[in-house]
Length: 156
Figure (cartoon, rainbow, N blue to C red):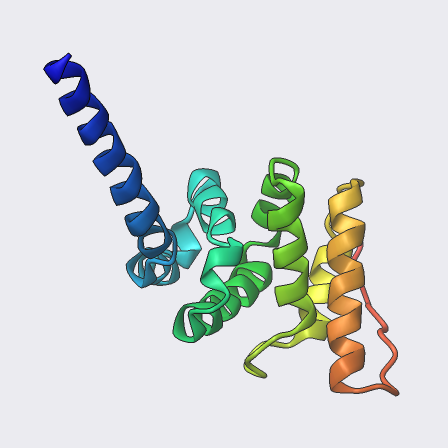
């Protein structure tokens, strides 16, 4: 009986420890830094890991959220097909948070119009592509309500 109580105590400690540590692990700035430093060489598993960082628990961490938003637009600009292919694996909450981030860019360092046209030009027909395009369009309209998107896609 005493061993059972000890086991339950350690089990309780483990559960409490994980609950207290998990938000810090999920909102790890070092993970974002690593992705940012290697953006040209990221692979699909790193994009998947990045998308998993769109957890609601991180929204209260301002520094983390801003950095995540910048990296999102950097990936959309430099590796858009990776985002589109990995979105198929996202749960609905992650997708909802991601789309909210796209609709509300923090930095004006990126040309959202170019990103929009780049993604529009990707030869892929899936629901996620259209959803991303819609969110980018919302972001563009927020920046300039009178702007109309005119993509000139090279056909090679």
